[in-house]
Image (cartoon, rainbow over all chains, first blue to last red; front, side):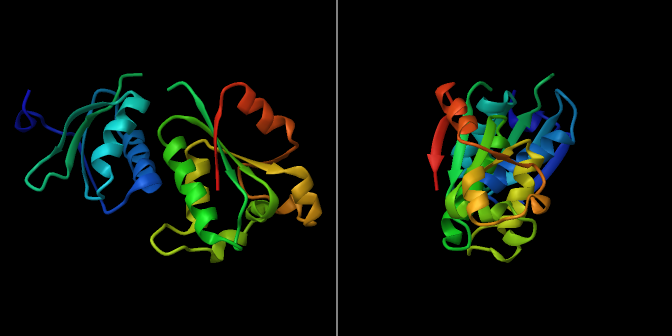
Length: 82
Length: 120
């Protein structure tokens, strides 16, 4: 499936948040959506392209795409089914 | 996610950079679903007092009080070294949310049972 074929349910722009603040923002965003739903997030911190995949591996959420988008700072994450 | 992390924070407003980064890493861990404890010892125990962290805002980071709140929100635990606490004559009635006073056995037990530890 290509990024364009997905319809994310939720959007979040964490701008320049990084490190611990980025992880907390991801945690909060995921708490607000249901299992199986897709979050599209924009994160421009230079560490995000490594931290977001790592966070997904630890939490069990699935990184569908990213970094992607026109500016290469967007991510699509499917929340795990509990 | 298996595994545990113990973040040892030994500084307060004597070294705001170390105190802040300790909680930044603790936030990254707890918000990633890792069972995480912060162990406040030596000067770090001052952070256990309500309002103490309000004036600590290191450049480039979120305010420390905000980091401590989000750490607890992410289900992190704040452990406070009992002798360090008593030595400084701090108040049990003024403990921040999520903090509990412990002796050395608790952090030692965490580590011998496999928790990794990083110190600031």
